[in-house]
Length: 87
Image 1 (cartoon, rainbow, N blue to C red):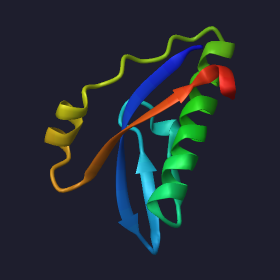
Image 2: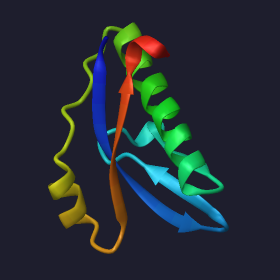
Image 3: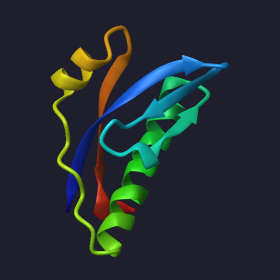
C-alpha cells in the first residue's frame, strides 16, 4: 500500500467544480458536484504520481494544507488522498 496526499483547490466555475493541485498543476480536473470532483481529483492525482514514478521522476513534496489555504484565501482547500496500488 502506497498512500499519497496532496492539497487541492476546489472552486466553482461555469457550473462545475474545478480542482487544481498547487504542487501538481498537470493533475487538474473538474466535476459536476463535490463528490464527483473529489473522485476525479483522486483519479487525477493517482495517474499523475504513477506517471512520474513510471518515468523515474520524483514526486514533489506536498505542501501543507495550512500553507495552501493561506496562499488562497476564500478558496476551498481539501487534502486528496489515494492508495497508488489501487490505480
